[in-house]
Amino acid sequence: MNQAQLIDHSLIRRTVLEIATLPDDDLAILLDIVALLKQQRAKATAVDIRRTARQRVATLQNMPREQLAAQFQEVGERIRSQAIAGGTAVEGDWEGD
Image 1 (cartoon, rainbow, N blue to C red):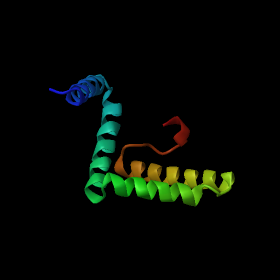
Image 2 (image 1 turned 135 degrees about the vertical axis):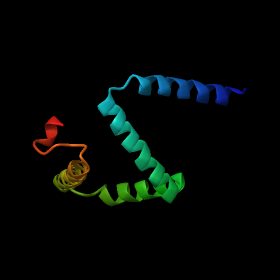
Image 3 (image 1 turned 45 degrees about the vertical axis):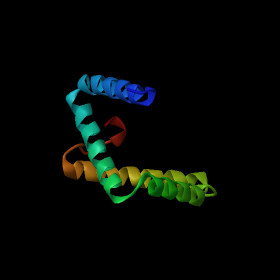
Image 4 (image 1 turned 120 degrees about the horizontal axis):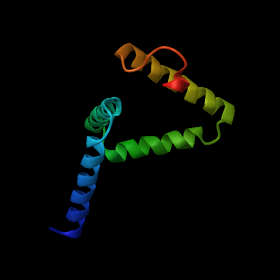
């Protein structure tokens, strides 16, 4: 086994150990994230994702802070609404979730 493979195996081992100790709620969130990443990966390559991210940064770079904050809040509310609909969040103040 070469050095890169040893590092990969070590990283995988540490990751599995960390995942095994997660509380059930955190594990469910992690599994949702992994499923989302798999969907994104199936739709686009890493190069595509990086290119899109760079384009988004360039677009947002000169946007006023207040406008960025409003967009961030809007996206957070959309994600929260989806989580409530999916049963992974409860209605109320989302800062406490």
